[in-house]
Length: 378
Image 1 (cartoon, rainbow, N blue to C red):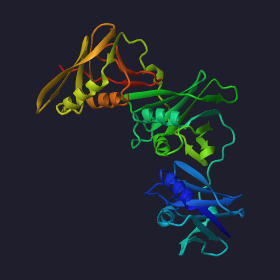
Image 2: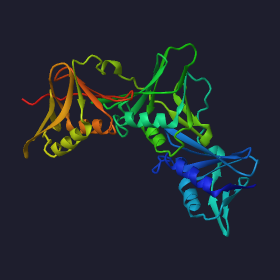
Image 3: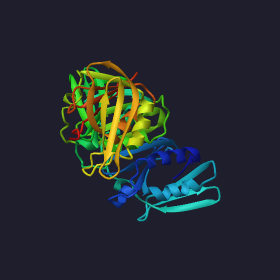
Image 4: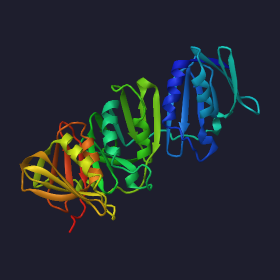
């Protein structure tokens, strides 16, 4: 059975799949791409132990076929192809299946495996929560939230992003235990079976791979949550994905986010980042706290010290909105990252005491960052 796929579309599909392909798979079969032909569509799927991605491309053949080949072998060949279309010939009836690829005067015969050797993916049936939103809205908020997680850490709540449905809204939450980022996703949210709330914890590596995809910002993406997996799709891009969920309990994040801070300050983000970047040279402590002391009143007074280098300080402008002056200490690297996420937006910093969480709000967004303080030096 022979069919042809446009080279441009095939290269684009393989590039997208590479964001989900594990370059060092734990099992040989996970180094493969499953090619399933049906009704004029070729469904190319990669899978690891956590997530999968399927990309659909048109093929001028309606004959069904299913075969599995090594992903890196297929991509190396297609990357070299110069012709407008690639011919696929599937030989699956023999003991040694082959995928023959024809491109102009070139022909490659790849070793293959039967399609049924590829892991069976979960099939969505009963969903408990569904969201439709724009791709750019999702990726923007997910990028902000995942920066507070530990994608390479232990497989617990710090390694995931919480999708929390409540009161008709969807919040994304991420934390590494020392800071927390929260944002809301715009779109249409629906809870099934009369539920008034739902929460699913998606592994951070899944979200990281998704945000690496270069897709139409205005494309509509749908998320659906079952008991132990998330299914998502972008019909206009021919993309479908599955991710297993983490089953670890998530902390009560609402209690971490202060909503009644006594002191608030509007920051000059550019000037503050510039000052913190300079102080970071000195803010090295033997106990690893790498702190900056923040004394906010009519100005923002910042100071840091090193056990070996000495001390440094800086003063930058701020607007004292209300409440008494505030003094607290933060990890200087967390504070720099938090302000850089503002992307030149106005930031309001709030606090209620030296050992209380410090809250950062970003103008014209639903984003909130919370950074836990470190104990002030004696």
